[in-house]
Length: 231
Image (cartoon, rainbow, N blue to C red; front, side):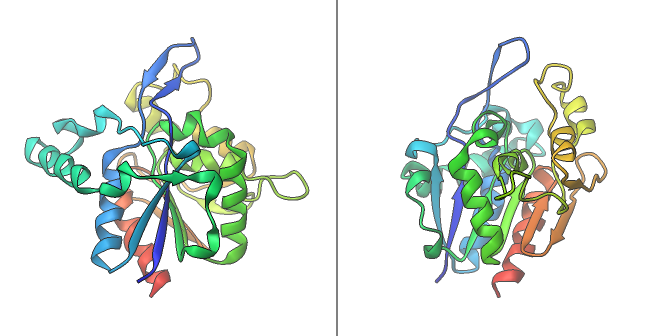
């Protein structure tokens, strides 16, 4: 049985351009769908967060309208409650990459607040990329790529093709005019090749050992793709 590391945001808010702290955290589906896929395939999941804090779920991701109705919302809530690993995270600072077969970053607006500027996470991403181990990153979690600095000071993911939450989706979600910065724009400025798909539709991009997804609907397909790299 292989271990897969889930690197998750440790914050419960996202600071907007006007200084308002918008309540957030990780997006439920983006943790649940890959978790279920990895566990069903016989893998062990270990959660890591900055400082080892218990990750906060974005309450918006538990709403019926985010899960195709009340039945879907109930299923997501029950699945989250069964993910005991969320209650016992290790410190991101203590992660030994050699112990894991793959690394996965679920999204939510939380990573825009902490992982985007977390040097420890940035080094882990650089090391995972160099190791050739499968690396999965979905939705807003590609914000963490912004902290991945190569030895020459450039972004370690410059030139890589990725999917990430788009400016169009942020606009439709109502945050584009409130955010300090937009993920698609910032990644592009860092030299990352963002491949934009239709808003809210699954879009998974594979480039070498990096597997990325655009939005919550991409998290299940991303997990399936990551599993093929572990086969």
